[in-house]
Amino acid sequence: MTDYRRAYVPGASWFFTVNLAERHNNPLLVEHIEQLRAAFRYVKQRHPYRMDAVVILPDHIHCIWTLPPNDADFSTRWNLLKGHFSRAIAKGEPISPSRIQRRERGIWQRRFWEHLLRDQDDWNRHVDYIHWNPVKHGWVERVADWPYSSFHQLVEQGVYQQDWAFKDKFDFDTGE
Image (tube, rainbow, N blue to C red; front, side, top):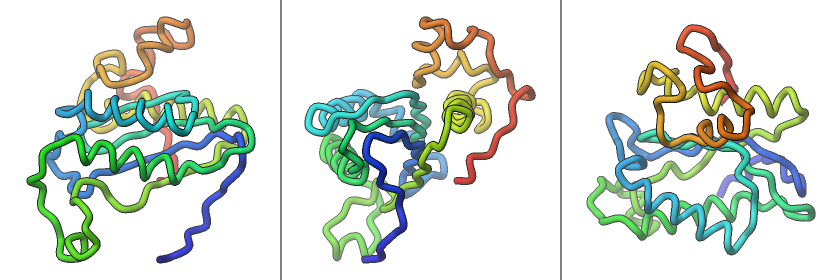
């Protein structure tokens, strides 16, 4: 297997993008939101982390995790999360011959995008990007209209205003 260069820094915060294998018109994640939430809880109970921000879109996830001091193993966490979710939903997705050979389901892309957050400005921009993403992809006109987002909790905490980030007020590329 290819050895990817990932930044494993104990106790750090990372921005992640995790995609379904088949993204085109695939609403799987929001159709099975309870199973996905259960998968996040399952992993968090076994390998703690803090979820700083998250958005669940029909076909991909963006989030920021902060791991405990002396722990940098986000890869195991993603492997467990993907597996737990996959076992919780019915089979039926298309599976490529290479996945059949490896005894894999065809739900998730094998890899994920990670970015080590370097400072507060980097962290803030990625939190904003996460919450703006449903607008970027055209799922809603206003950030507040997307139900599967930590935006609502941050509004309650006073971090954001309810009317934050309309469609043409925000432009940011994470490099993913």
